[in-house]
Length: 138
Image (tube, rainbow, N blue to C red; front, side):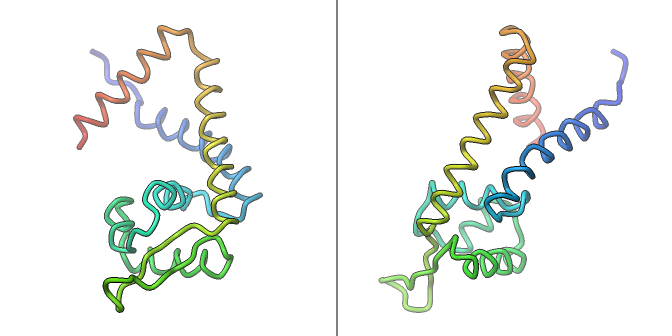
């Protein structure tokens, strides 16, 4: 097997993805690097900042700054826990929910774009290889 410039190709594809994501995230006032936080909050309403940091593999100090930013933009809200008065639960605001719907639409659009660029067999093979790489990398 000849070793190719795979990392370069992955990096180039990642940059193309980010460019498409950036178009949307600029419209909804969410940093392209932060969109996964909104998806996680949508899937886990009322989660803690610690849960978010662990789930997204982000340092808590960085996450604190990110959450503060989106609290100020009224995309995320923090509510005091009913069981632990020193803990807070995080939720999407109505504005944050709308932004998250836009993110999901963008993800679907990108998935469709990839599917259209490949044959059915290539698309299935691509996803299989990506799953394999992710599984083995971890």
